[in-house]
Length: 456
Image 1 (cartoon, rainbow, N blue to C red):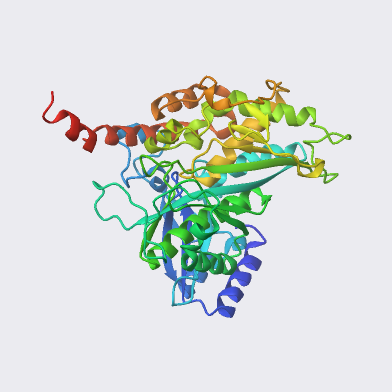
Image 2 (cartoon, helix red, strand yellow):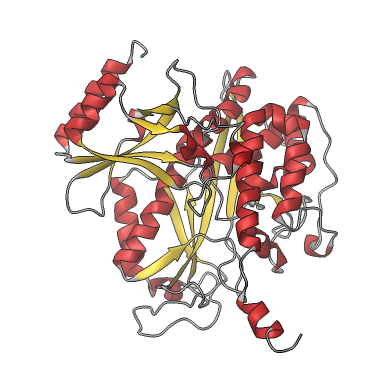
C-alpha cells in the first residue's frame, strides 16, 4: 500500500461517520458497464481497506452481459485458477445511495493484483491508460456526455415488445414530441427525484429535454475531467434505472429498444487543453480550427470504424444505425447533425468535436477511452481530415460496420488500437463479445415464428 492510503482511509471513515453510513456498496464496472462488487457493513468495509482484504475473482472481468463466462477461449486471458484481485476504493467517488431509506454509501473501486499492479483488463484502467498518453504530451482532455434513454412500461415477459408508460395525464404518449415541454412534464415526478438524487451524489447533470421517441429523454452533463465524467455516467445510469423502478416504470439505455422509434445515443463532446497554458489547443491564435484539432478529427475519421466494439458493444447496438437519424459514417461538419462527427459553432475556448456514433448502451469508460484514443492517434500521426460536409450526410455511403462480428474483426486486427488499449484487453473484448453473439444466434425470434412457421 502507498504512503498516502491511511489518510484516504481516515477521510472515508470520517465521511461514513458524518453521514451515519451503515452499509457500503463497493462497485466495479465490468466490461459491459454493469456494477459488480460487494455490499459490506461500514465497519467491515473500513477494516477491509486497512487489511487490503476486499477481493473479487479476476473472472469478474470476463463475465458477459448475460452473466455467463466464455468457454475455453478465455483461459489464455484469465487463468482457470481464477485468482483474486484486490478492490481499492477511490475515495473521490464516495457518495450516498439516496434512494435507500437506510443510510448507505457507494464507492467505485480500482482493482489491482497482489503486487499492486493494476488489472489491465478493467474498464477504468483502460481509460486511465489512454489519459496517461495525453498527460505525457501535457494535454488534458475535457469531455461532456449527452445521454439518451427511454421510459417504458414494466416488461416482465421479454417476448413482448416494449411500450411507452402512462404519464401523469393518465395516457401513454402516442406521437413523437421532440423538445416538447409538456411531454417531458408528463414524467416530472420521476425526474424531480432524479435531479434530487444526482445532487446528493454530486453528479453534474445540466439540462433535460424530451427527445424524438415516445417517452425518450436526454440529459446533458457539464463538461469536465474524463475519468470523473465516466464515473458520473456510470452512476447516473444506475440512478435513473432505480428511480424509474421506484415509480413503477422501467428506464432503458438500450441503443434501439423499440422497432419504430429512434435509437438512443451517448454523444461525447471533447476538447483538449494544454496543461501548461490552460488554453484549448483546438483553436489557433486567430480563433480558427488549429492543425491539432483537424488531426484529432482525422484520427476519429480513420479509427472510429475499428473502435466500434466500444461505441456499439451489443447486438442491439447495430439496429440503431438502421434508423434515418443515426450516423452511418465518419464525415464531419460544422453544426451538422447528420454527420457522425459534429463541430458545434463556438468560440476558441469552447472549440470541440461531438462524437455522435456511440449508443447509450456503451460502457462510458470504454466509449470515452475509445473516442479519445482515436483523436490521440490522429494528433500523433498528424493526419488530415476530409473537407467538412455541408449537406445531408445520411445519404452518403455507409462507412461503419453494420453488425457486431464485422466490428470485432476490425477491432481485433488493428495494430494501432491494440497498442494503445492493450493486447490483452482487445483480445478479451473479442472473446466476450463473440460468446455473446454465439448465445444470441441460438435464439429463435418472434419474426421467425411469425413469418416462417407456416410459410416455408
